[in-house]
Length: 510
Image 1 (cartoon, helix red, strand yellow):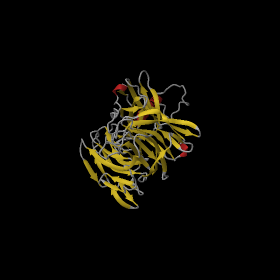
Image 2 (cartoon, one colour):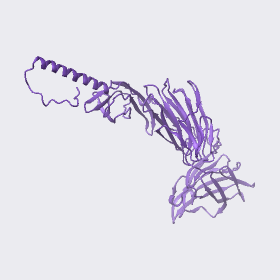
Image 3 (cartoon, one colour):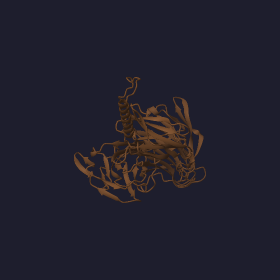
Image 4 (cartoon, one colour):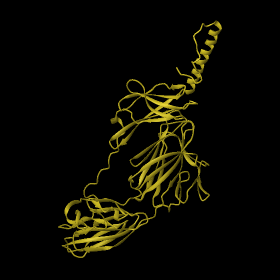
């Protein structure tokens, strides 16, 4: 029973009750009961919804239960969320007034958990009915995607991305934010894509690209609408307004490709969505191996969302509704912005010189050996994004030494036979607008009377390297000046037998 505000028992005394007093007391008690019943009704929560989600973690899979309810209380101080797995209900969260959802990250796989929600103020707490749900075992969770198979030895590998090839995820993060109705969105010179008219604006802003936009409609249809809800403009001039809308149904989805260049970039997606249903509604946004669940804070209204996707390499983004909802329910897709200005990279091969031996002085430069050992990173703002090999490489701890102020800090090389299916693959990135200088160290020998060639390819441009003689070893250094992100390949031309070999020691950065 609730203790009502404004009711005090301090002045009650013991005395003989007259018939009039008894009648008056009965009326007061009836009013108290009526007021208490009305108070409970004010706090009553009429419906609670649940959804179980499984998600990948570094240790395997996790389980979480999403709980939402209708906020029918009018003067609550807050809400409590209680769970019963075995035994009594236990408070697992205390929330602010007007709250409508909670995510239970401590769900126990394989258990049956019951939940109830209570709205409270100084008069007491009013609870919803119990709602129970079976939490699946972890081995029933959606499995992590199978890794792509490694290329077979000596299989040719094309490291240059092709727009028609599947894109790779790279480093991706997703952040979703509910916002006020946006109205006018100023582009401020940024690159923009409008979904309603397939309109791309200012694609020179960034070398990164938005491409391959595709809607998959399994329920209902896709339609375009002019609207003042989303107006994209540049310096006061309207470029696009409105959106395309699809039914709020899990059979529908849309996707697009973000073609990255290796530079940090953030794409912002603008959406509006509403579910005319008391069931839980949301969106699943997936980019590469990263997933973000966007859960609507309430039903029977439109919500506006911006989703920021940070990426470097190319990735496919897929957006899929959670659940199926009718009535006015829908997902309105407006526009996509690229927020970070980026310029095309450039590279200049200064030449290839012949060195006297395998000792490399790294006293005042950043270095990275062929096995990934690196040091002196403070000497350069540039960085080695990756070193990889195509074909059949083999590491040997001999021949080359990296010497830092008289101390050997790294050694060895990664070698491969003279086949044009073998290659050294290197990705480099400079710091901002500051140019970097990379020096590649390698050893090559061709056991032939014919001219022997290597190819040094930087961002698709080939610089041939000819060995002046056969039947001998050459210690070589290639100097490359660059800005932005570049891709470098070093590979033999043709196929030679005997002792013909190429050995990559590593590189330095200035």
